[in-house]
Image 1: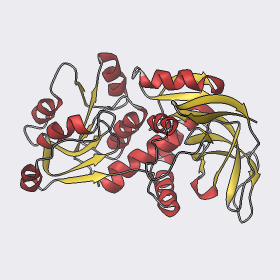
Image 2 (image 1 turned 135 degrees about the vertical axis):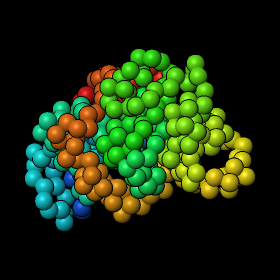
Image 3 (image 1 turned 90 degrees about the horizontal axis):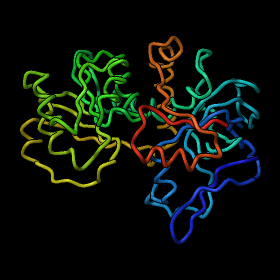
Length: 327
């Protein structure tokens, strides 16, 4: 089969278009004929060999962390699936014509979704459901701030927050075009972080109360202002660190407001934890994805062999929503 393989060199990782053996499903696994996969910021860390700092990056690995496609093979001890079933899920090696995944991570693809739309769902919606609902403990009527809201995960966060009853959903982005697209998806207030201070805008929109839940994809540079515009007993969920990993922390402010800082990542989760997140998405979000109340947003579609160009486009920060690779 064809696949985009990460080759690690002294100069760093690079993507190469290779012929590689087709995988075989092990016990408990499904073989997926990949129809589409999506590009994530984690793919860039995977390319650089820094995705999991606790392990040495392998010299060669198929890129990609999610995919959508048809069941092409079924491993031992798997029931409830048949060849040809439409599935999507998080997995290793999504940048390929075939991949395998634990059958408990497989999410059925609703009939109304295209393969390209389905490929955008696993990482983004699992990440943000876990961040907002499980860790952020979002309650109906609360205010949510999503930083870097035009990213794939940011778009999912905006939609999930509104769908789950947030009273005010606020997002930050760098252009009026991005903010307009997010408003069409349910965002109540858009803040151009290049032209205004987002913390001031949040406090003004909430009559000084602040945001109950902040979903942060930026990291260090935003920490001080995030804390300043958080409500009493607010929860800050650190999903990404696109702008930096470190910042000075005001412990007095955290104590005074009784704030909670929560970190999330898939890298240290057990399989059981990942399965629980997938099941949460199926229970809480799949019906809305099936009937259109939640709508994946695709910015651009590239053919799989143009994955290098697709990742370069992601690094440009021009996209609104997800970047997809069609197989």
